[in-house]
Image 1: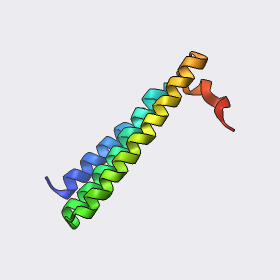
Image 2: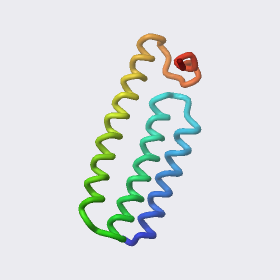
Image 3: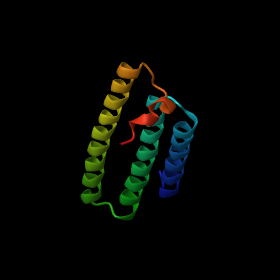
Length: 100
């Protein structure tokens, strides 16, 4: 696998995630689209680190980013679950009054 193929794959995954985040109205589906976009960015960064400078510091940074991303998505799913339980709705347009 070459750097070009890795970047093309990352761009394709990012495009699918962008389409999923923009076209959906269900909170969980929007979050899945965002997750795909972040994973594509991580894949592109990993490809650069693997092919340009294959040292373990980049891999450690990517693992830290994955851990932070996991916590962020867990909090997002907790908010989506709470929103569904309280308002009995999982649509993004029903959550407009959550802002400050």
